[in-house]
Length: 319
Image 1 (spheres, rainbow, N blue to C red):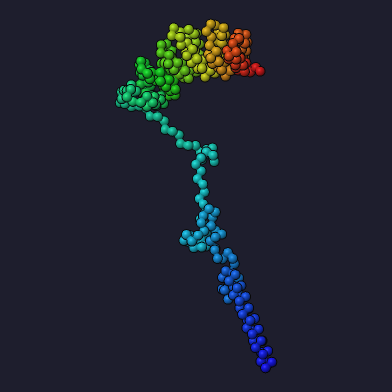
Image 2 (cartoon, rainbow, N blue to C red):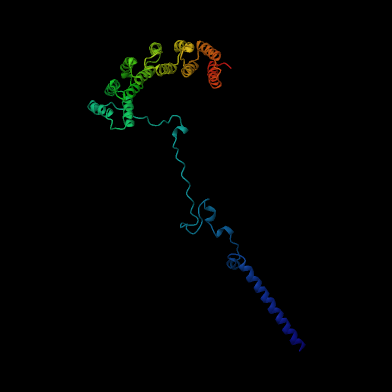
C-alpha cells in the first residue's frame, strides 16, 4: 500500500510539473509578435520586416494602408526648384526688352485728337493717352500733343509736360523749340511745364533762358511769382552744374527784400546744397547769418527762423 501511495504522489507531481511547463511556453509565445512562427522555424525575424515601408515614409505624409504601391517601391525624388530669377544666377541673362512703341498712323490722328478733348472719357484715361503719345515720339503723336498744348483746355499743361519727356532723337529739336515758345505763356501751369521740359531736353543750354525767367518773374501782376520761380530753381537744380550757381546766389541775396519767403529760400538752399560750389557755400553761410540777425522775438516765429538758420548752415557743411 505504501508503494501504491508513493506512485500516486509521483504521478501527481509529474502532471503538475508538465502543466506548469506548458503554461510557461504558452505565455511566452503570446508576449512576442509572430512568436508561434518563430518558435516553429527557430529563426528570429528582423523587427523592421513587419513594416518595410515605414522607414521610407517622408515626414508629413501618412504611412497608413492608403499606400497602394508595393512596400519596397523607392520614393521618387522631389523635382529641383525652378529658378524664376535667372539674373541671380548669371548676370548675362537679361529679361526680354519691352517692344518699342509704334508710330501712330496718320489715319488715327483725328480720332485720337477728338478723344483727348472728349470730356465724357475719364480724365485718367486721357492723361494716360497723352503719356502714350509722348512715348511714341513720332511726328503724328508730337503734332497732336503740340495742338493740345496750344488749345485753351484743361489738359494743355499735361500735353506740354509730356512733350518735355520726349526721347525720340528726330523730334527733340522740334519739341525744344516748341517749349521755348511756351516760356511766354500766360497760363502758369503751361509755363511751369515748359520750364521743366526745356531744362530736361536742352540741359545746360537752357540756363540763360532760366536766368531770364527768374529775373522777369520776381514780381507778377497775378501774385504767382513764387510758383514760376520755384519751377525755374528746381530745373536749375536738376541740371546741376556749377554754371547754375550765379543766378541762385543772386536770388538768395534778395532775402532782405520785403515779402521774402522763407519757403522759397529753402528751395534755393537745397539747390545750392546739391550743386556744391565754393560760391554757393559762401552764399549759404551769409544767408544763415542774415536770418539769425533778424530773428523775431515771438517764440513760435523765432523757432521757425532757428530751423531755417540751421538748414542753411547744414547745407553749407558747417557745424
